[in-house]
Length: 274
Ligand SMILES: Cc1cc2nc3c(=O)[nH]c(=O)nc-3n(C[C@H](O)[C@H](O)[C@H](O)COP(=O)(O)OP(=O)(O)OC[C@H]3O[C@@H](n4cnc5c(N)ncnc54)[C@H](O)[C@@H]3O)c2cc1C
Image 1 (cartoon, rainbow, N blue to C red):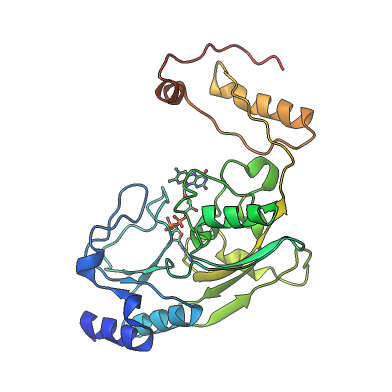
Image 2 (tube, rainbow, N blue to C red; image 1 turned 90 degrees about the horizontal axis):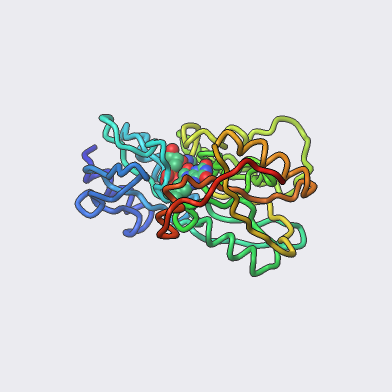
């Protein structure tokens, strides 16, 4: 089967918007390291069923796929290789299906952008706890596939701790439905863990049940100057202990960041005394 025939077959079984031809996709950035799509189509399924169709038809034609979220990774795991992969982007699967503040869960499609679920949770008086600088582009699927951490990892844990359930499509087109909705499920193997942090190698995540948390009543932010990065762990431990485990976020800034943002010299540093 030629590439044109494969694209036509996918369009015929999905919809015309599901396939972006190579000429249109070329040059699109797929990682924070600057990797770009060379000469390959981007498949944009709009539902789990369409993901199955793409995977099934590409598999039959011997065409490998790279799952693509917001393309914000620093690992280069979405970089093209000599195998001539096509890209499967979750960008049209960007629906927040439900936010249930009472039971503290949200059901989303994998292409939902992090900032959008953060804002939806906030509107319901709760919060989605993972946060990182790529929030405006990184997707739930990408965050799951990389087991992203971010700035609030001390208090809330990594992405793994925010996933109650998920749905994924395997390489042979089978759909694995692991859409649990309760936190306290200790029955048998926790199979969803296979898809968290495995960068799309074991399947394409299509939907997820996210854990929501109580929103903080108040937030205080402090900028602390340290003589050395080696002083940071001790200081963080002391603050966390003093706050009874409620330190929710931290970010390390190098002197150059401070100078760039504040337009002046780096702040004075001294040994922590708190
Ligand atoms: C300013 C900035 C700050 C950042 N800070 C942090 C940070 O603090 N902590 C941190 O961990 N990361 C951080 N990152 C990295 C990045 O945002 C995360 O790795 C993010 O989880 C990637 O999400 P994405 O949707 O962009 O995924 P992509 O970059 O598109 O893909 C990442 C990997 O996931 C796979 N993938 C994507 N979607 C799916 C899917 N639906 N199913 C299966 N596999 C899939 C891809 O094939 C690839 O292997 C930061 C990035 C930026 C730009």
